[in-house]
Amino acid sequence: MDIAVGEGQVADLRLGFDRRLKLEFHGSRVTSDAGLLAFRELDDALGLTEVAGQVLTDSRSGKNSRHALGAQFRQSVFGRVAGYEDVNDADRLGHDAAMRWVVGGRATIATTASTSQMGRFETQVLTRQDNLDAPSDLSGKWIDRVHDRRPVKVVVLDMDSSVSPTHGDQEGTAYTGHFGCTCYHPLFVFNQFGDLERASLRSGNGHSADGWRCVLEPVVERYRDRASRRFFRGDAAFALPDLYDFLEAEGYRYTIRLKANTVLQGRIAHLLKRPVGRPPKHVQRFYASFSYQAGSWSRKRRVVAKVEWHPGELFPRVGFIVTNLSRKPKRVVAFSNQRGTAEQYIKEGKNALKWTRLSCRTMKANAVRLQLHASAYNLSNFLRTLALPEKMKSWSLTSLREKVVKIGAKVITHARYAVFQMAEVAVPRRLFSEILSLIDELRRQEPAPCP
Image 1 (cartoon, rainbow, N blue to C red):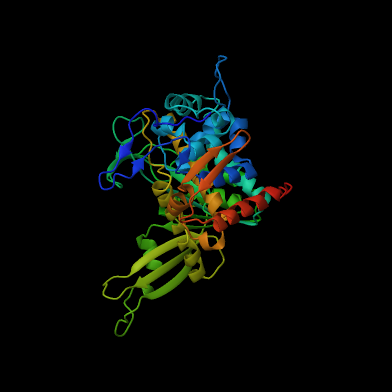
Image 2: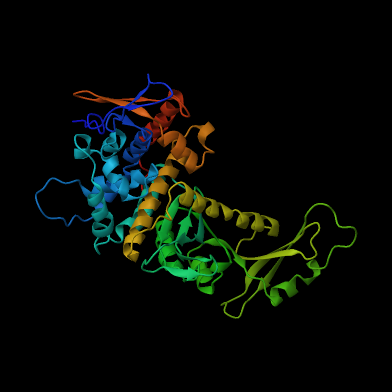
């Protein structure tokens, strides 16, 4: 039964510039997030939140009617997709027509979970020992669902760390001079499609590469039988002998930046002399390749150097990359430079999904919140890469939220069905129909057999 939130409780709102205008608020009959239905359709086609319901353990007791853990997980993820990154919005969203139909179950005839229920779900249920690992593994399980329908022969993994500023007395927070703030220091692994393979929340005063094995090993294990060609990229923080040995043992080709030192610079001394003649007005680039073994390395490895002379600069810009690729130096550098896309994915997670909103006091609760944000990020990215028409493929996740999710609609409920009368502004009917058609194609595709 619909609840007309607001109406009948207070007087009508009128506008002074034209008294003929009257404002009414119908929280259960009007929604600003009708586009969430497309995300829910994709979720159903791939069986994403269904997986969460299967792996979460419900230890709640009592016979009172309650929302299933799968429904509460769906409410957490879809709320973040729509830009409601905190459970403080749950009471109001509980009456929103789009959110109720997205969550499903008893929410379609009543309301979604309340603020207190969602707070307990995120800070108590998901932080129990039997549920703590499940959110971390969900990203990989979801990506496997996609690859079951769209098998990949090549995988490129990018590892990078980031900063999540903190405020107040939060467990694990620490001041970091590099970032100039008190923060957490999460670690991420993305693939070449922008999917977030795995994330880990770490204390703010840790090194960028701390805990890399716990994050990378589960991802590498999943791709052992899925991809025949496997690559890894990382910045200078991941220039670790143990990581080189691990990647080589797993058959990965890699490019990892190296910090400059006198030995490396001595090997390219001939490129560090200013070129003869009048300096041109364009950048001059020179490349070199040589074998090198640091004191902590188990053997010699290939190092590629790039030297850039910029107009008006007295000294060149120099970069070194350790790699086991056999490509020409220029191509090695070009491949390594694509690692910058991971930084763009992190920015999208911060801006569109607000995954720096980690406001709980305990480290475990904030780690769970990061994983919920990661699931929301992946759901949004799946829609972008799998179900958007060609003219929308270049949209950022922020544009996706503002133009697709934030479609206003009037909801008319009948005895057997509900009608969403959706506004045609940024996304007209034709484009929305194309999105649903692409999702329907995914639904009809049979998962590929495991190799």
